[in-house]
Length: 237
Image 1 (cartoon, rainbow, N blue to C red):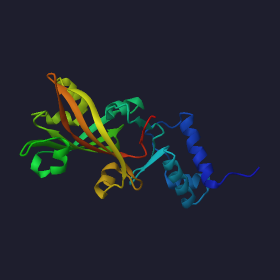
Image 2: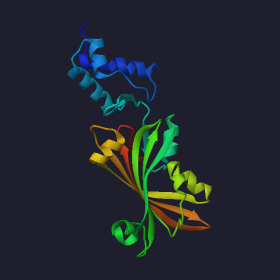
Image 3: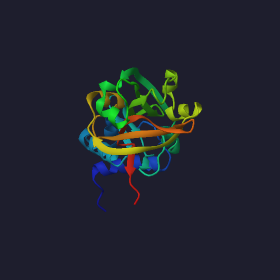
Image 4: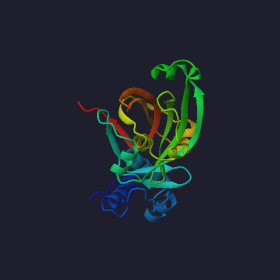
């Protein structure tokens, strides 16, 4: 019986270990060097096998660190909205946030975004950038614009945790979001933060509405860049 191609043998070996529970989400697999020595194949063959596994969303490759199992994958419906925290918990990962920057900016500095948020002139906006992780693996970067007219003050420390949970704790109810999705190429900074070498990111653009004291208002505009190896969005017809 003819043997399958060499790279396929490596793929099958790793997939079998994932499917049998020997490797779990977040576990690191052998390096290219170790697999080449184990199978007696060239580094080129091993590299091809690992890239195939990335395409199939079994693993993610992080520059300078290695390859990690990501067989649990988030497939989100555009019609059923959930937070990043809920997404991570749904696939058994510990959701975490890291605040990268925070500042107050004038709405006049961001005319296009101000228009999306229906902001007046010279209104201050909370602008903060966060890195989102699951089991400490970088998964998404969010750029957030929140109206001070709707949310006058923010506990900065709370931005290191779930923003949705924080809103709930101060009696805001998230009603929903208008979403736009597109695939984009990562910037050098995004590659570094998400620790990826290749592939497109999934960009979610959301205008989120909340209710507070019986009044509905546009809270803000949120751009989130997701690692496409972890996230897929679908539209249910």
